[in-house]
Image (cartoon, rainbow, N blue to C red):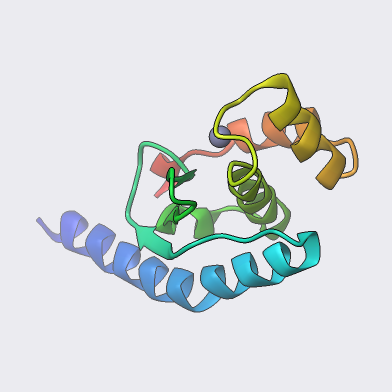
Length: 119
Ligand SMILES: [Zn+2]
């Protein structure tokens, strides 16, 4: 159906944009925070915005491009903090919070108003 073709074309456009924007953004933020990571992979993932592997490789959803820039950055900071803590422990959240000016809860609430299914 035509709608399906349009949706696919829009995802491919997002993928193109994501590949241009996200790896550079990760590099800039990691550099600013003094964090190291492995590879960055861009996937058309709907199940989550992003993830960090045991080897500190980051997988980012193309649908992150639907987010406003500050939430995109928040997702990146969250994943980079998983290079330090491989869990969602109190220490993990304290680290994230300290890197986003004490706004982790607020940003998390804001992020919940968005969905990878918005496209
Ligand atoms: Zn996480």
